[in-house]
Length: 365
Image 1 (cartoon, rainbow, N blue to C red):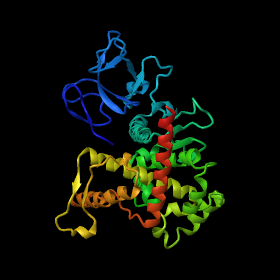
Image 2: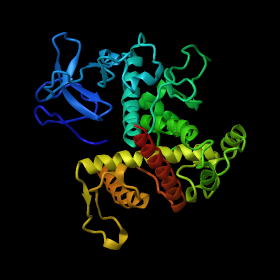
Image 3: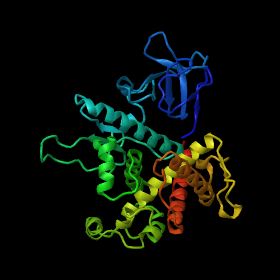
Image 4: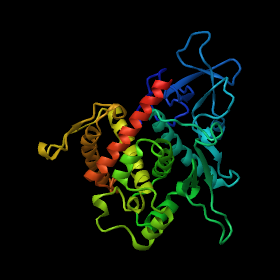
């Protein structure tokens, strides 16, 4: 995520801010420009123009309908046929807000989902709701387990563009319990979104495309029975040498899961490096010899770097630094993974596919 600045007073802003804490201007995120703007209300009290625009015919906006519930700060063109922004238009089902804890969980879900959608838009990937394109679009169901004893459990997953998220994942305690029961080293709400949307983009970017042959050479044959592969993984566990070939033990279960897990980490890397770039970070540990490769000046916007090896040269020093800082605070490593060469090759493939897709989308505009 990049840094945002209030163009009225110069205050640094968080992506989720709806009001500038210094000048108190209302703020709105404009998804086509990927910018957070201070807003000036029009006379009707419903629409806004971006601060600094003086042209009589300058576009006006409304807030997304979900702004009223405090879960969205994105803008919608005033003439739009929908009341929902690009991110919220992807929702098919939201939690039952009559349940008090559901509102907090929905807020956390939307924070993660909006950050996901920002990354997808920054990559230039298509973000289209199933309401617009029922066959190829993307949609989310945010569901809770049935409350009665023995009630139906909601399974987080992806099915032909419909991503279901169990809202229990937005509860820190429940998510930590799930992490321990699954023997995972890492489990976050944003990570779930990134993993599940990876399945969706496999359908969009790999299946029935010229990329499929290279995918199979790197990840394996996705035609292997998926259900049997998962059952085998749960019964027998991952191979002893999984860490040499996969980003996680679960990635070893099936090529589709390998893709989704690797895709999620690829997005982790791009977004975190963009934040480091926005802060102008450099890493130069005084005690580390240069040959260890722990020096890095993050002066490049990662979304614009074509050579994925260059991205990895920046990532290792940054993660070593992040993990060291967290340990000084008594916190677990934010990135407890070692990326082996085979995984780097898989990420490089994803990077190539995404850059080609983004370039094609720009050319079509």
